[in-house]
Image 1: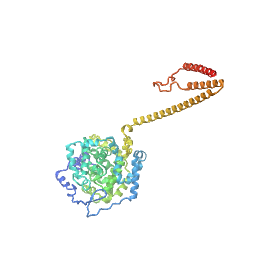
Image 2: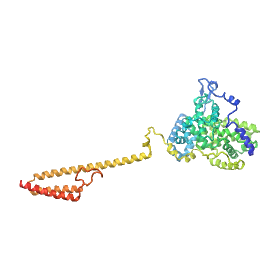
Image 3: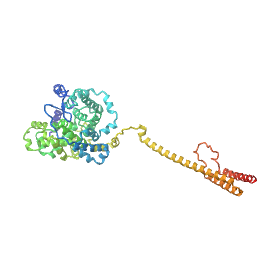
Image 4: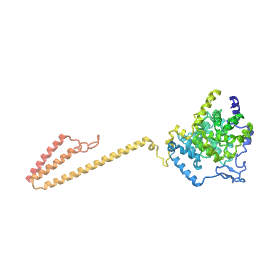
Length: 527
């Protein structure tokens, strides 16, 4: 491997223009590529492939193998089921999610699935209105000028970005400008533009912005910093892992002094979006969002092994220049979707391997160059790590209700108050029913006593009348003793004067009633 000085020289020559605009002649040359329909020679009846890329009408589109409609619909139903209860699947069945990402996310659900996998949906819910605030702010003129110059270079033959000033380029500008305001310490890097453009092909601007934030902060932290230390460090990790995966390719690159930064910068920083065929790009991104940066390492290792992994393949690249040309023009059969996905899945490079090598290379970097000036956040290896780091995502990923309740009723405190009110209402209803039954019973007994009293008056025998009257009096007194003295609520005015009688008053009334009965008996006897 080269020494530190030559590495910095190679890195500087390879990264030139990554954070700066291209020269005027280069801009004039690139400005002819896909600025709008007329400049590119496309008529109003231009044809596009299934991904939205404009194809030449004279050369028929090469049909790619597509899944049967029944298989696609079956996969869509499975993904809809997962997305409806995402937190449970992520917590208990992450392996199943990983297998389904390896098979490929259905196109109709790809944008939504990327948001769930990356945690950008949670991030957006936690920062409601943040993107709108950034969108209306005026950006730093330094970054705004660079972004505007780069807009027409991003996928100029895609129908979304083909027109200068079209909705695609406008949204791309909004997303990139918002990121420079969100992370002013990092600013803008040209490699972020194709990343944001791919996201905009699958989701609106606000969702694409938060997805870009997650890629820059969680998946590839430090990649877009000013001096790009993170990408240089990952180049060393890639080269070290290559020794284990393909010793032949490792020895050749080391012999020719081809530093990894010369060929892997665009691969890693753009996540192969400007290298692979589009069908392969989408499949790589499906796995990348699920499993993290190890997928990017695996793709790079598979390509190096496929291009330089045998003595036969090395016959055509005896020098450094031939080797670089071979890596710039990768054989299409090695980038084929089926071949590439099979090799990526079978390659046994784990996040533990990457982290172990990262610690070793970081220690070596500190010995040679000192502490890296970029203090980026720790890298998270895929959706599972992000989900564990943000447990609050479980509540934020709940399906949104179609009918929204008022804020008071939807808060936990109001729900608790509502339950207490319901319990109090039930208790009051029971009490009222009990009081009603008691009143009915008292009324029934009163009528019964009146009936017996009327019968006693009509009886001819004095002793019988006296006996009946005495029984009625005893029953009424017993009922009065059993009746609560304070049936009305405390503090309420008493309407019945007998409600607050003491036991002494009751006995007095009893004696008076006996005397009145005796007087009535004498009158009856006299009459």
